[in-house]
Amino acid sequence: MNWRHDPRLKQLLEKATLESLFKNQSIYCNDEVQEMEITLRHVWKKYEKKDTLIEKLMENQGNEAEPLMQESWNSLCEKTMNQGQDHTPENMLTFCKLFRQIGDYQLACEMIWCCASLAVQEFITTRQLKVKLHSQNDKRSFMRALSHEIGNQFAVFEVCHLSFFSNSHKARCVNAAFVEANDFVQQLRTYHLTEEKKNELEKNNFNDDEL
Image 1: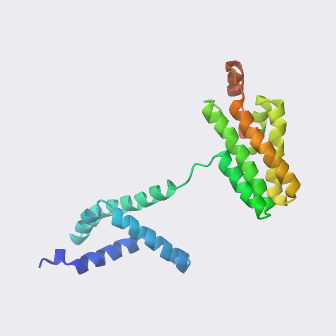
Image 2: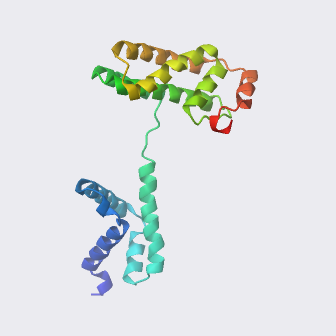
Image 3: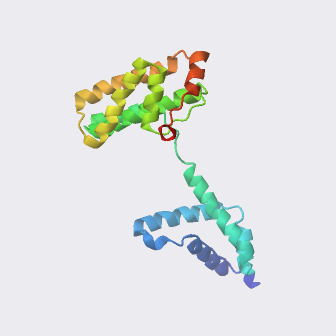
């Protein structure tokens, strides 16, 4: 039998390839190492050019094998990064309900803040506004420019965000802010944005680090 077709050699090369991809394992604990090894093996199993890579390694063509190894690693990174979920304001309010039920008002406050932030971004996206907001101050300025009333309402959620760090909100305050957040989301979705107002908002510079 041709030595290149020996399954034992193939297994050895697969093991060496995985170890090469997994260079930094010494900085992780055993559980993390095991989890990452399982992930790498899964990616390796699904990698379409695996046979080509093994062939290059068998023929000692390291220069041609290296790009293939990098490609398999990139596929892992891209797949992992794309597994995130696109959250909505409603998602955040659902999480808020959960944290309220277990009495964790600190995290409930932060979910309310996240809900408001996502609602602002949703408004900008759905109305196709050419506006970029990079900070909490930017969001505050934008809300005040949109409407004095909505700007004041947004301040409620800023206080919730502060309470995440100070843990000052109790059940009554969280419940009131939750109702406000629901109303805030609906107000933004039904807000009548005129072309004049849209142009006014787009001309404003809400990016505080550029002022």
